[in-house]
Length: 537
Image (cartoon, rainbow, N blue to C red; front, side, top):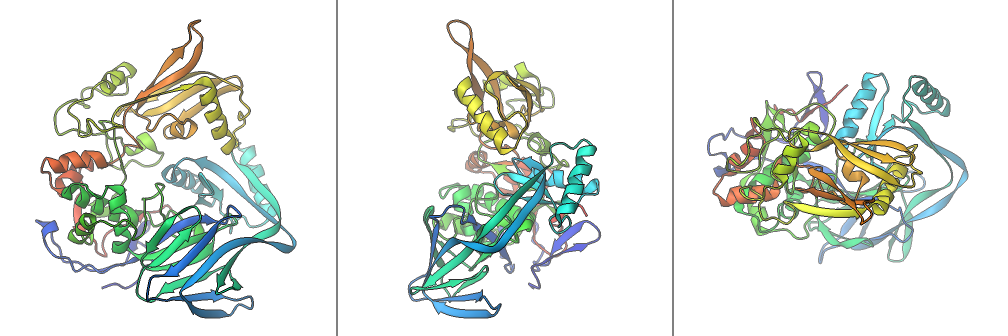
C-alpha cells in the first residue's frame, strides 16, 4: 500500500519511490484489473508568475464547493481562511536595503537532458551544480554551496584559469522584490507561500495569459529561483494523466495508440520527477515536460485508456525507461545521443518508422549526406506517410536567418553575438539516423558551431534536425538564403505519436507498439522494486 512519496537513495545510485503493491499480471497484462493505489506529483502549471506587471490569477471553487487557504502571515504564524474565490497578483515591494543577487552560470542548453549531463560532468570535476530553467535550461554552481560573493569569484577565477571560459557570473543589485498579494472579498493579504485546498471538486484557475482551466488536487503558490512565483498543482498521478493523454495523443486517437501513450506518459512522469528540483516542484505543464491542461478537455477515450493501463509502466532491466516521444519522426527514430548529450539508452535506437521493409539502416546508414537526401525524397510506406509534417520545405533569407542566430547568441551571452551577417551554412556531421550532429555557420565575426538540438534553437525554420540545406541564389548568383528540406517534428527519439496511429489501425497491440519503438523493454506493474532513475552522486 501507499507509504510515502519521497525519493531515497538505495544501493548507491539507485533511486526508488515507495508507491503501491501490484499483483504480477504478465501475460494479458492489459486485460486484468489492477489494485494500484495513486501517488501525488507536483506540477508547475504557471511557472514564472509575476514576470509581467499585468499578470493576474483568479482562483475559484466550483459551484457548491469552497476553498481552504493556508498561508504564513508577517509574524510567521500559519493562518487559515475559507472562501469561494480569490485573486492573486504580484507587486514590487521596496527593500529596506539593497540586496545582491548573483550566481554562476556554468553552461546553457536547449534541453534538460543535455543540461543534466553537463551538471554531472561538472560534479565529476568536483564542482557542485544544479539544473535550472530561467528560460533556457542552465547549469548553475550550486547556490547553497557557493553562497558568498568571495566563494563565487574564487570559483569563477579558478574556472577561467583552467580554460572554462563559457562560465560567467550573473549579478544584480536589487532595490525591490516581488511580493505575492491575494485578495478575498476586497481584503488584501500577503504571503510568499499559499496553499489552496478544495472541499471536494476541482479548482478553477483563470490566468491573464491562458484560458480558464480546472484542476484536480490542490494548489500551492511558492517562490522560485528567478524572483517570481510558481503555481504548483499537487495532483494524483492518474488524475494528472487525464490532463495529459488527450492533449498529447489527441482525443480521437485509436484505442491502442491511446493505451501506448498512457503507459509512456505515466512512465515519463515518474522518471522525470527531478527536473525542477531547484525550484521545489517536479514537472512542468508545457512541452518541456508533457502538455498538461488539468481537467479541461478530458476525453472518454483517454479516460478508458488510463483506467485500462492503471499502474503500468515501461521498463528496461527493472528501471523505468527514459520514455521520450515526439509527434513525427520523419520516417526514422533517433537514438538518445542523436538529440542530447549523455549516456546512451540501449532501448532508444534508430529504427525505420515503418511496418514494411522500406529501408535497411544496418546496411545503409543515413550519416552520408547524399544517402540522407535520397531517404528524405521517399514518401510512401512509412507509418507517418501523408501527415502534414512528415516531409517539409521551409525557406528563409540570410537576413532572417542572421536575425534568428543573433537572438540565439544574445540569449546565450555568446562572444560573437554582435554578428552582422551569415556568410554560409553547412552540415558537417550526421548520425546514422540522419540527424544533424554538427552544423558550421560562417559569419562576418567568425565561425559558430551548432550541435544537435541547438540547430533548432538557433533558427526558426527547422522543426526537427532531420533536414538538409539547399542554398538559394539570386539572378547574379549571389547567396540570398537557404531552403531547409526535411522531415518530422520534434526530436524524433522514441515513440512517434502519429506513427502509433498507423500501427494501432493495423491492429497492433499497445505491447507491440511499445516494443517496436523501445526495443528490449517490458510493460510491468509499478512496484517497490523498480528503479526510477540513476542519479550521479
